[in-house]
Image 1 (cartoon, rainbow, N blue to C red):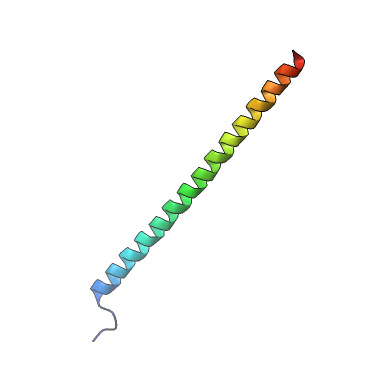
Image 2 (image 1 turned 120 degrees about the horizontal axis):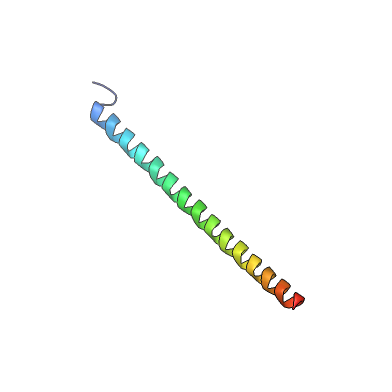
Length: 58
């Protein structure tokens, strides 16, 4: 009797690949959310600075 049959090995491999894919997807989503938040803050900072500079020069 084999320690692991073929079906068990295949199912385990599929679950492992699926789990890795889910982890990568969650990580990618977290990185994209962080970058989007950073870009929004940077744009707001530039717009605020630009507005203050225009008001100072006027």
